[in-house]
Each structure stands twice: as C-alpha cells, then as structure tokens.
Image (cartoon, rainbow over all chains, first blue to last red; front, side):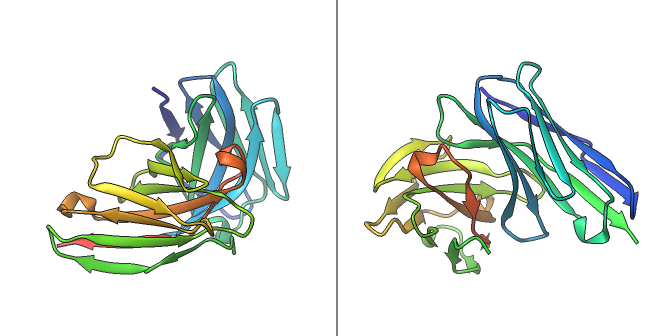
Amino acid sequence: KQEVTQIPAALSVPEGENLVLNCSFTDSAIYNLQWFRQDPGKGLTSLLLIQSSQREQTSGRLNASLDKSSGRSTLYIAASQPGDSATYLCAVEGNYGQNFVFGPGTRLSVLP
Amino acid sequence: ETGVTQSPTHLIKTRGQQVTLRCSSQSGHNTVSWYQQALGQGPQFIFQYYREEENGRGNFPPRFSGLQFPNYSSELNVNALELDDSALYLCASSPGGGRAEAFFGQGTRLTVV
C-alpha cells in the first residue's frame, strides 16, 4: 500500500527566502507525481506534474524534482512571497491504480 | 480557474440524511475522481468514473455511491450520513482514464450535525 509523507508539517519563513518542501513515498512504482497548492477551505491548484520518466519540472519560481528509486520528491520555491502562503500537497499516482495518494501537506507561512 | 465546477459550495445535513454533490468536469475530460478531505489531512480517494463506468474505488463503504453522465459530469451520493462524513469533498477531472494531470474543483464543504 502506497504511503506518502511530507516534511516539514509546517514552515514559517521571512519573505525572500528560498525554501524546500520534501515528499517521500514508499512504493517507487509510480506513474506520475503532482504538486498542488491549497488555500484555506479551497480546492487544489495544480502546480507541477512530473512523469515517472522525468527528473524535474519548472514553472516560474517553482522547481520540482523526482528521484523515483529513493522514493523522494522536493519542491523548491525561490524568493518566497507572502502570496505563497498556503498548504502544499504532494500526490503520487501508482502504475496499477487510477487515483492519487496524497501526503498530509506542508503548511507554509511567508511573513512580510 | 480550472473549469471544474462543484455544487453546492457548502451544505449542512442531519445525521441519517442523504446528500448529493455535483461536479462538472473540464471540457474534453472524460474522467472524474472524487476525494474526501478531513480537516488537516490530505484528500482520500473515494472512487473514479471513466466514460460512465466506475474505474476504481478507495476504502469507502457502499453508502458512498456515484454516477457519471454522458456529458461526463458526475454525482457523489452519500446515504445514512454520519458525523464523520463532515469534510471537504473534492472532484477532479482529467483526460484519458486518469493518466494525466488532474484539475480540481473548489470543493463542497459538508457539515453533518
């Protein structure tokens, strides 16, 4: 059974810092991995999708990497801004399932 | 804006009642998945519909059921509501049976009292 964990559970940083969010998964037989952002009480916004054959994806200030063999992904946020404050969720889709398994999320606060 | 719309946005139900939640998928997407997200946790997979057929189910009891219509919109029905069913219910749409980027709606906040 796939299990996804995220470290840290919560993070508070001053504006302008570069930061790294970590995601680990137990079963390396994944089809893809997707990072989402969730504002309080809202739905999920897709940030980056990494296919299992890819090592990383970039979008603006965001860069996500994937090391499938070690069961790890990182989301790097450059030059953080207060508008980045949200919960960041990592989700993996397995080779044999048609659904995502989510981590519990990292709650990020960027202070002005 | 993802193009995935859910209704209603909030509702309150009494324990034992039944509820229907609705989801309109993004144009061109034939796959809809439903997730339950309890407060402070990641979403949990309920089930997925692909071209009007159930295409996978998570660890939820049979009182959670669903439908997908020819236009690929979908319903989630929950019977005999329990207090623990209080959660944010999320719908996600994707093309081609789910092996692609998923786009989520804003969710329906269900409170059972």
